[in-house]
Length: 479
Image 1: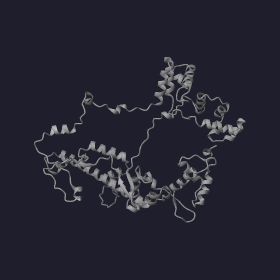
Image 2 (image 1 turned 30 degrees about the horizontal axis):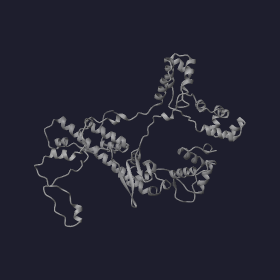
Image 3 (image 1 turned 120 degrees about the horizontal axis):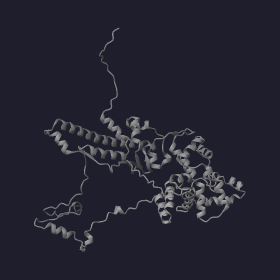
Image 4 (image 1 turned 90 degrees about the horizontal axis):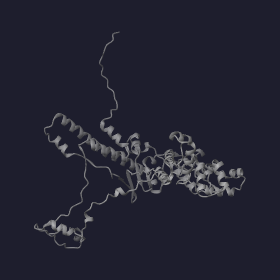
């Protein structure tokens, strides 16, 4: 058998993604802010792209003749007021006189207005607040250095994360000097700052409040775990006291701050801008795409004319222009296609979840990606990309499009299944309406749901409760 090279023809089918398809898929999964950033970057890199300028306000036009007098009252609505103006008017003097307010102009009027943005206050951080107090107390240079090291080792909650020995070794100070300075700084504002654990910060705060109650100190020192679990009977038995006194002491502890640095947290709220607005319009719903902040694009006329008019250009210039024009055209078409796809998906969601938009979360129906995909003849992966990081403002509130897709909970009497989000809403309402002195346990909630033909396990109730960030019944109990 001889070995050699041979050529054979074979027909095969394979999926090849064109650049247009790749770009369209990429745009689909971008959030609104990411899309705006990407468009801005493309405009900087592609000279063939330019933003469509916003339309200027209509200017007043002057006619050479006066309009005819209307023959009826209805004609008054359609008459535009015009003036007969001669060509020999000194327009500059006329405009200056017309705009004059009769006010005397002073030197202050022509001064440059202040930049009001320079007056916006920066939020004070915990470090800044403590450093200011450190400088105001008149400490020695060594004490200020120790104080700066202590401040540098505080976490965002205001707790000291390093030991006295570590701070002393880092700065080359004695352990006694660091311990003395730490004790002084624990009297700083906010109360409870520079503590090493929860127990210490609570003790510092009751000392600052001037409360001298042995029972209160004993609960904090030896029964933090029971306090967390609201096991007040065990605390009363361990301290040989009445439960009423324990509850009185606990009510005082509730007003203390477990995280002294919380008020100086620098986390800022991140606001969500909806991609879609859904409005009730009579008996139907109206969908409006939110294009605010997204520039409207067009192809630069200069480059378009240079290519279409056949001007003398070098081969490299023609290739460059053609590539940029094609890239710009693909981007514009992809953005339009993205908006159309999102609109179609939202239309389908409204068809499936109409009762939700009219009545609320309790009427949300089970729905999966396949339902919408079959409804609008698209692939499930496309629906998944469209609904990721996209938000809709509806009559029921602001929701991510993913919210409308949830699993189903079967009902026991043959009724139609319920959406898992609807079951979560029922659990939340039950807990909101419970007796705080006798809160509902997960087993009790399971039994109440079973009476409404909703059969789910206790562990499922516990899972949904945790997803709603609700504590178990033992920690919700109020005394």
